[in-house]
Length: 392
Image (cartoon, rainbow, N blue to C red; front, side, top):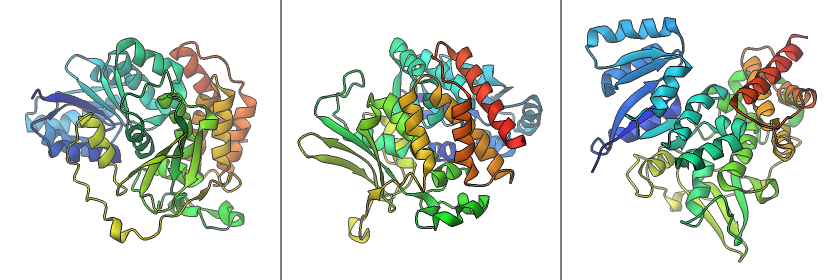
């Protein structure tokens, strides 16, 4: 068996750490080519000491100098670099077979797109890259022959429930609907009238999943699910009306596919990201992930309810952006990133997140996506508009 070499974009985050945990269980199958982080230098240095990658990449020159100083005494065969160009090279170079795309937000777009253009096997955990670039990203995958496998637990579940020969270019007639499950986050049962007073610490306290602060806030507003709706559209070729969000607080069923004959196929498992990571790493094979098997006898009740867009207005904003098309999803994502950062910094109230996004969507016109440069310009314009509303 040939050892496959992997670049992990965002190695120090929760997805990166889970990926390394799975890799450690299969040293005969996988080796690490490159590890990247933005500014978590100390943790990246520890990972380099354990995995001895050929390259370690950070976000800034100062972080690179700090990392080089830490790695120097270790005598590792690790080249230190920084910046977007280095990320793109690590994701697209011939020394790399698999790319785990786990950089949060728009920052992950360029290296993930570079991996797609280079024909890599891409494990996509960065939903924002696909939400932003849409057709550009899909075109790059199809032109190069890259393999695109979803890591989000919901999309990975959908992928597992689709026919084995599924092709997004021709959605099989027998598929009626994709059902994305959502836990409902920490405020599913909280009085809507009290959400104005939500603190960052309350918003990041997810009842089921351990995630980074930004994605945890997105889960609390359900923007995370809205972005997943847009991602599902691009991954599976489904229209907005073919994608339904269902609240499932137990987070046991990770998503479902409904067929026209009345069948509904579901993927179940304990809420642990190592399951979809292991599935995508070895696809079409199966390997151990370290996740405990699901004990059906101890689950108890599984409950479901419709998604409430009064409680979760960000979900409606995402559907609206998908239906608008063009750069509307990129504008939505940019405004959300700015709003969440302002909320976590104490500069914006929780219920002002969706209000800010709505303002930006109404202020910045959606235009046709022509290339990455024009897409990034729209991202810049949307962020500037969001900042201006916050500063007013």
